[in-house]
Picture 1 (tube, rainbow, N blue to C red):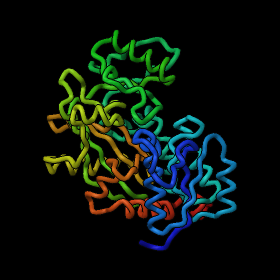
Picture 2 (cartoon, rainbow, N blue to C red):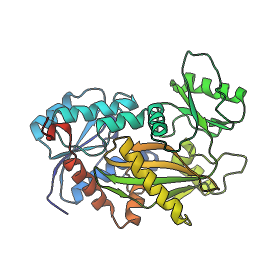
Picture 3 (cartoon, rainbow, N blue to C red):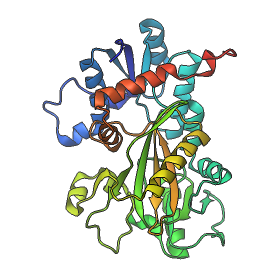
Picture 4 (cartoon, rainbow, N blue to C red):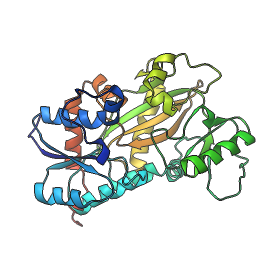
Length: 345
């Protein structure tokens, strides 16, 4: 480990973790587990750490930056005032304050979080992604001819699988209309509709700014999920421990991937990372069809880095332990060439 840093860990105001897990239920701990893991590990590694909860104001953040003068801000925010796409503005504020921070830059967050713009960019770069259309609120329902059923309906803006359930995969226009309506009325967002790709679900972690490191390919294994249900990462599949245990749903290093597929995943992950101007760390989600065709589903800057989650597990499989991973993420934050660091800044 290199020198110890004054680290301001910025989290959602409801997720400032306690110093100990004692007396808390598993359900309570799950809410702020990432924050607890990061803060505890950094302190154990000898860094001076201060946690700051942010909800809908940057006043406290500005005060902490001015008064405490951290070497780096460890950014664990995933929204601002309940709006997912506003986390980019907090990061932009850090850049305006000439403050090094961990994770992705504002441009990368903007391009990757806007799922529609992201898919348009990938299509422009001829990166294989499922055919798609956007069904906007208040517009007439019309199914473009280019879309072939079955289709997969998700929110155009929300993440963490919000609004994704088995009913998200639809076989006909009537079910599509129903699910689009659900997305508009219950989730409150436009609906992104794309062709459903049957196959293996693969996750590729990438670390870096200019020079990139690809982590071992991870796979979501759907266990004994009934064949009548589509194998997709619903909110239950991703986050419901009891549901995962019931069906034997696990994630782990992808086995038996042909060398050609591995090489293509590596190449595509790097191309996508650069096309979306990502920095710091990200996870890119793919589907691999039985015939070997790869499709990118989405890119996730600043993915979950809880100690036991996929990204940290993939790093561990590459010989990078959790403390070292966090250290690496902080060094990348410190060395990122933001505009204020260049000749123009």
